[in-house]
Image (cartoon, rainbow, N blue to C red; front, top):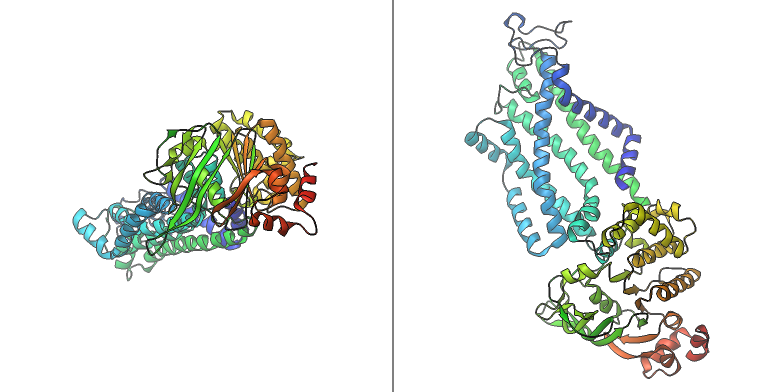
Length: 576
């Protein structure tokens, strides 16, 4: 979507339109130049040497009688192929390596960055002269080598762009939906790099044309080939005999390079203008990796003595969650409540396998449907196990709805794709189910919203979309992380009613992360209170509300209630 809008804005810019027309015309000549030429571009005619412009020779003839117009037209192909060869080589090497380095980081990033730095330290002209001395005068071989030398620019551009979005919430949402890393990179990450790559390709193509023409101007190309650089060399050697010979290739080179530069600048400006209509996501956690599955337990979800730690610069391990135990059964809603920094979101993310890559599950066990998900050797969640669970058996509702929808795709696309992949539905069947779900979650005009992009809907509607997407593949467990925090009070009530109805209808277990005891009282069966990474108390919601055993729980209740006891205010919300 962003690319489409940018192209529309580009064509409205006079300089952008001019550059597109010139580049399009040059590409047209490169493809159909042989058909448009009037003579064989390499056939000399000693009877018509260095003739001026005439009806027979529109741009005159060169020092051996060859038609300048035909050579200029035919030479366009050689020049553009050389520029294309540089760009393709740089893209093929730089973009995939940049995607992998930016997305996975660690050793892949270290090795890729080292190779890129090494290539960037090489003096390009000296390398190209060495290649010519070793492999001959083929300009294509020189351009291939130049493409390798310039590939680090594409690597760094791609790596930087990917590192900026790899932790976006919509990328985490894609992981939770059960998409593989390959699909996430191709469908969600690569789209972010497309626009900068177009600008980079335009700039690199101009540099390639300049370098090729410069090499051939110096006589380092293949004189038997027809190109603008060879024509430039011939014109310079005969400048005192016919000065016009140097003008035509110089105009072609200058006009093409200027158009490429104008295109890059105009496209950049178009992107800057279009940014304001697209929402930006905030960073979140990375996915953890590694394996092992064991069997245990009889609850739908069981967490036993969970402890999560982060390595510190001094070598110590700082634990942010300690000795947390709870379970969730089918058809049950468990609330985890606590103030910011209490460890409730870290606990939820550990179940989803979305902890940062440096996080370690120091001790404890996470079991889902009898399968243990934590590897005791690595302290990580098995990525292969989570791939088979996320989006299928375990679903996730995040707290920032707008940041979890990919701005590059329509709402309908983001609802339909998981159902096609997970449930095996046809595109039409998935669309029908998506529209039905959108009606279920209270969207009055599902067809319009289905065709809309995230920036075209409200936050409350986006939250409903995320709920519809979370339950679309009929999960056994739904993890809702502050699902009403970003919403207005009236919308919060509607979302809670929606969750309650869906839970009752689908008989799924729900793990609700919140700081709001009112939400807990309204929706939950049991509650777990956390403070500073530890369990304070847990039990039946009504019992905790009537007689909290710990002072911290009482403080949380008192912080929400004015001149009322917890029982009078909260149990009334449940009809007590």
